[in-house]
Length: 337
Image 1 (tube, helix red, strand yellow):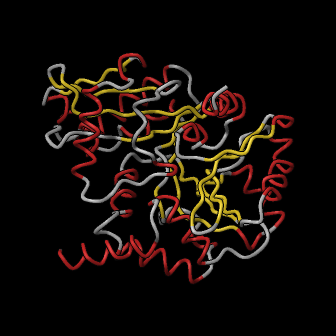
Image 2: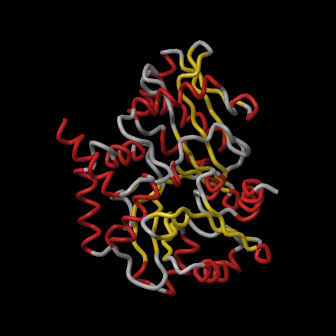
């Protein structure tokens, strides 16, 4: 059985973390534990193994999986994107090893309209897109997978970003494998101008919004309407959990728990990192949908205090290049601007 097939089956049985399904993307290494019906997905960065969220397994064997994974190699381990279950366990073992590196907005889909429609600005955006002829419909997997039209939308969006795409838990290239995902497409006169992928969060009966690619000439309000229509569909299907995913360094996370040096780094990154990645803009965009709550997204180490090297490992996991190279590009772009 191919690794992706094994990963997918385990995620559908045990996936609880919001990002659990993204571990099927072909950028990870895996450690499988057949006797525990479990696996851990990770990348290597800055000399460490950076785990994608948490081990995928039943809650009762989580501690055993953590122990086995830690003992496999001498390389240090950083868990990034860890949610409530694994954070509770890691906090018992090493409370000084846990920090908040972001947050994700969440809703109960049945409450979506109650949250969103009270915002006059959002109602205006929905109507603006509809008046420009935007129609949202869900495409079947066979229709969407490897669709040249959707790939063209994705390419146009990536080309307009002005910075290299991030990877790890925000991988943009997913159109070759849409099994179990749901794809909502915004069309104008039958031509796709944007789309939204949703990934399942099986054990929470929920969904994660994966990405919002749109063309440069997509009408204003296209992304907002995509999100609105998709949320209503999954609500009608009985979903109980919906998140728009990680905002790195979000002020809505549990940043007050962090050591002083990390709070300073996060603030400086939000301000001076804007030419490459506008985390503040992303936070503002997701906030306007009036989330019911913000879930902190944690990073954790197990045997010591979380340090600068761990933060660099997380950064390099997302950028897939050395921190020095990313910093150099940031300086060059800042000077040009």
